[in-house]
Length: 400
Image (tube, rainbow, N blue to C red; front, side, top):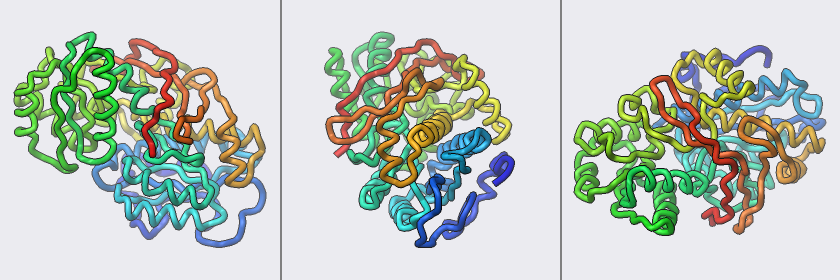
């Protein structure tokens, strides 16, 4: 594939049905013959439609920009990286079908993608069965502890250690939690409760709403009645916007009320910045990071997508994940799935995410990505880095 992929402003309209290849480079998919040489082909899974599509498309853009850069710099093992992209619409059953198809194609070396925890959980056993590395760019603990799971996003406790400390110091010890009703927000709340109590605070309320909720008035009423000092939110997708705007409308999210979590992510900035500007948000990367390589990525991303809003952190996670993967393979000369898996385990990489970023083993037999964590301030224009916390250790990842 030459030149930039056609991902720009019309990206959602350009996507094809699930049964078709959405975007592909290199050889066709579905054959049983082993690919020749030590090339790298990736099966990429994205929720290009559905509630998580905005974040999914941002991840796709970051991934594709990285592949362009890698190939322009000589590729992997002297050959271009190739890939195929398919839409799972955020549906675990569909995700499983796509992952199974990729895993049975001997030309595909590894899997990358998905957004929600339940779709990642659907992929991992298939990757394990195939002995196939599976990389994600999303925040949160991997749903399954696996030697083939490579989560490039920050873990729950890497985020929460700073989120909890900031909220309690700035607003007070009484924290309420609100989340979308699926496994990841509930796991996040459990980890939050442990850290809040360890710091002398109290999780005084928990509220969950189904994905697609359009009326949060009753939830907001119960949260207000609990009289929290701060709200920790893991409401995702379009619901994050709805909850935030209604929270302000019904008097919950006042300037005196602490507010942190997923709704402050850059994916929702354009819709909620009137409520979130001036607040602090814990991230692994922000587009206001004053690093030459990071700023070059931001410029390329804006040119590629035509978007002027702050760049999604998931896009950056995917971008630097691919640079890490390519560096690991080039450093080792890996060619097979198992060799690639071994190469990822032993590699370290300098990037805007930190010096010597690398994976360490967790207690459950999985991996944790060690990179810097930041506190950023939401401004009218985006995210300004306020503090670099360095690496936040977490070897208690709550995968099974």
